[in-house]
Every structure is written in structure tokens, then in C-alpha cells.
Image (cartoon, rainbow, N blue to C red; front, side):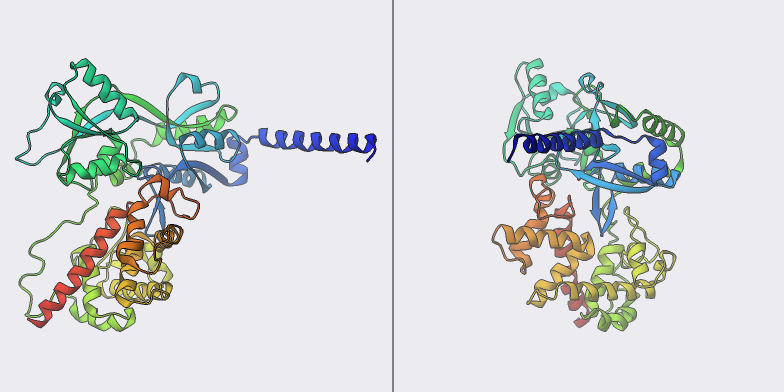
Length: 460
């Protein structure tokens, strides 16, 4: 090849890279975003920012971003980053318009990003139980001689080390180095009386308090820390629009309902001890005739339909969950629409049971490759509760780690639980991100146990 040809090729390569660099640097501010009709957020898959539950996108940050987009008639696109470092890299590369997982406010970042939109002011808190027999810690000095479990090499660990030094080295710091243990796992361990104390960010602790009613998260252990959404430095109009929208909407009912949804409403159904009393002999509810009517539609016995209804609503047709699931069978309005029933009709007991039975039948077809019928039922219940996408993710993880993707007990069940760990839900074989898998596993166990209990009631 001649020198001239090589020179021409070199110029072409330089031009190509130059055009790529130019394309990479091209950004769009809010006017261009509105013209395109779409806004792309970059977020983390987590219990607070963004997750998929019952096959619907959710999360505190996601819901607020969706509300902002709805206000401006924009379609919301979501891109998920593997970690906080990738959030900033993806924003810089122009892969999205807005980071909606809160970024700590740091002076060194202010040259490259604009903090805007949602601003959180939080602090680290002590997580402890509130049972009558537990002695509550009300002052940091009372931590002397106490065992506090903390995730290794985290900001919580560093804060506790500093606090321990301030108190003269009296706190017994139990440094948890196991990679698969998360802050939320430690909170659960406190609630289950496996450990007495841990430390978490206030907003994470408050969210988990909606799952565990026996924990207290009121005692602050650090100074306030600010974090915020962020955009690129060259999109000031988007930053301005977000700031103005939050200023105007932070007092609205919609905004407050989103806050309440994630940080106040209990995620556990209220147990009514009297729900199974004063019924005719052999009955489990007032709706047994309807469960029997639609049992054949589901492909299973009527006790299964009754057990799902009991777990979802305690047989209360007017109930709605924190996530928006409605009626006896705890169905999402969008799911019901697939079966020709509107959200307003889900409080009708018969329509709710009919759609619930049809959904179970559809899920039975979806997991038809699971040969054992009792094992398949557990796949169905997991998908009914958490969404079929998470179950297929868990099957993919089972394949990867040489477990059986068609057996629930001890196999796929294990990976459903592990989907609350970043190293698993960020795995390339997973498509649906974070899941509070322990709740799904608990749901499957409770529904199957109550199914057998209801069978025994009928035979008495």
C-alpha cells in the first residue's frame, strides 16, 4: 500500500473519531428534550430509586421523574447504571439526560454537573428494636459496650469508627465483610432479633420500617448529608425546569402521596385474627362459591384461589396495597386490563377472582417446562407476587451457577432471594434488576401453607 493511501486512510480514521467525539459532545437542553418528546433518566436499581414489582416500574425517584414527565407530556425512558461511578460516566457520555439516583453534594463535582431537582437531606441513624423487653438506646454514650453490626468499608463503618474514637473506644463494632450482606439485610436481622443494632441512612431505614414494624430509626448518628439529582453542566435549562417543578409541586397531594407510598405506608397486610370466625362449617370466606366457580379456570383447586385472596387482601374486596394492587386478588390495574377488566372494576369480588384465576392459568402456561406440578405452583406464586420477569431472572442465575432452573425449593428460590444483592441483580443474565426477594419467598411459603390449612378446614 502506498504512503498516499495510508495517509488517506489515516485522515479518514481521524475524521471518523473526530465526528464521534463531536457527536459525543453534542447535548440537548430542555427545549430539545421537549421537541423530542422524551426524557431519559439514568438511575440505580434499588429499593428506593427504581425497581420492577408485579411487572411494573416503581421507585421513589422513578415515580417523581414520571410525574415530572407527565407534567410536560414527555415519555420517560430508563437506563440503569451498575453503580454510582457509572451514573456519572453515563451522564457525561450523553447516554441520558438526568441522574435520578441521589448524588452526594461535593464541591469537586460542581465543575462537571449541576445539582438540581430532588434534594434530600439525610443522616445516618441507629436501627434498633422497639419491643417492650428491649432497652432502647436514646444517647450515643449508651452504645458503649453494645455490639453494632456494620458493613465493612462503608460510610457507616467510617462513621462508627469516628464515633467510637470520640467515646473512647467503647463500642463493639462487628465488621461484616461478607459481600452478599447488604445494609437492608442487617436491618432485617435487627427486626428478626438476630442482631441488636446496625446503622443506615435515614431514608433507607424509614423505607425498611414500613416492612418491619418493630424497629426504631429515630436516633441520629451523624450530621446531615445532602444529596441531589444531577444533569450535565451544559443543560442549565433542564436544571432550571426541574428546580422550578419541585418548588411548585413539593406541597401538592401527588408529591405527598409518592412520599407516603414509599416511606410511610406499611408494606405488610394487616392481619385480622377474626377473618376466619363466624363462618359456616367448612367455609374459609364469604366468597367460597366464587372461588369454586373459577377454580377450573385457574387449573388448580379453589383453596389456592382462596389462599391467594387471603394473602393479598384478607378477603377485603375494597382494599388497595401500597403498590396500587386492588381488590380481593391483589391485582394491578394494568394487569387487569390485559384480561379486559378496568381498574375501577377490580373491587367487584367476582371480577377480581375471575381475573386472578385467568392470571394463574397464564402463568401456569408460562412455566409449563417445570415438570413437577407442586414446584410449578411455587413458580406461579412467585411470579404472581413479584412479577414473572424476576422469576425468569432467577432461573437464568440458577443456570449460570449450575442449579436446576426448573426446581423452586433450594434452587430458583435461592436466587430470588439473592436478587436483592447488587452482584446478582446487576449480573448480565438479569433483565429486571433489584427485587426484595425475601418477601417473594415468604409469600410463596405463606400461600402454600394456607392452601393446606384451608383444605383441612373444609374437611372438618
